[in-house]
Image 1 (cartoon, rainbow, N blue to C red):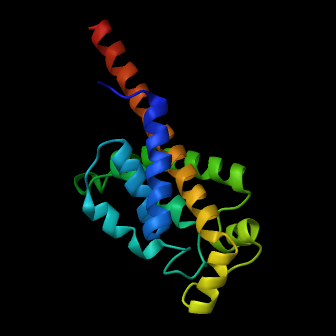
Image 2 (cartoon, helix red, strand yellow; image 1 turned 90 degrees about the horizontal axis):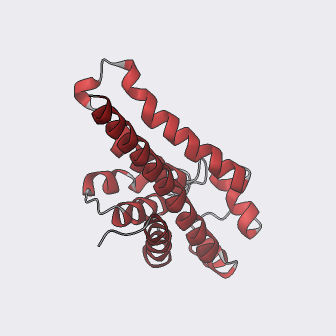
Length: 179
């Protein structure tokens, strides 16, 4: 039985949130939620997201790792292949869809910088390399707030992916009906 769009979106949200609560690593958790909701298996993409957590390398100095994970999932499905490397136009679809994710994210959170998001969600930035800072971040509710954000980004990215699949399917049907 095929899942409804809402069921797929809810699964992306729930799985990403659960992964973040249990394992951390916002970009990987976002990718895992999206891929599980869409029945995609790809450990290479999942592994490639590791160093993008908390900005980049747990520094907070970069854009949100969940946003990075969402863009990676979109790019996995709509990005340029190595064989198309010389073709500049093959960059367009993944970038347009990733920009859509970025714009929705910024509209919802007001920024895409990890440091600014932490400050907005829990009052300040925490250095996650420092055990005392990590403990303070957890007491401030960072895990709950960030896991919800991760789930929201997984839902946003999955929505964009599903809408693009619908658009492609309609184009394909229109092409068949015209031939």
